[in-house]
Length: 99
Image 1 (cartoon, one colour):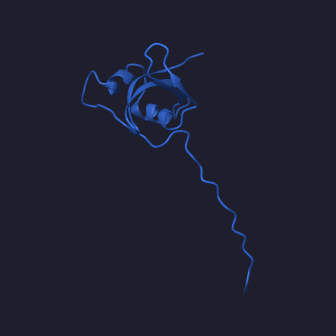
Image 2: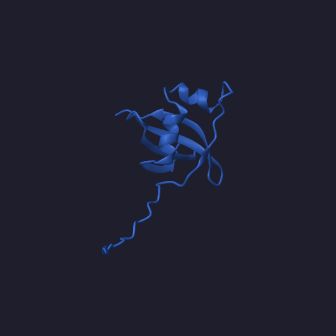
Image 3: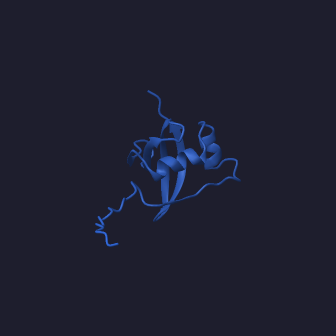
């Protein structure tokens, strides 16, 4: 049996931000994991925003890059980070933005 199949091109989807290695210092009691935990957040919350931010910019207070977006449980947060090397990020702080 012969059929006519039409193959349509599939557009390549680009992520909002390229893949990044995100550095976490779990062992340091004064490190970024402990710091964001003080704000009720986890590395998974921060990773979700850094990988697919709603908006990015520069922090007015620190001059560092900042990303805004939603955690997996729906909270709107901002993440201030440093770009250590191309595609390597170190989250400095993160906190929820309330209305």
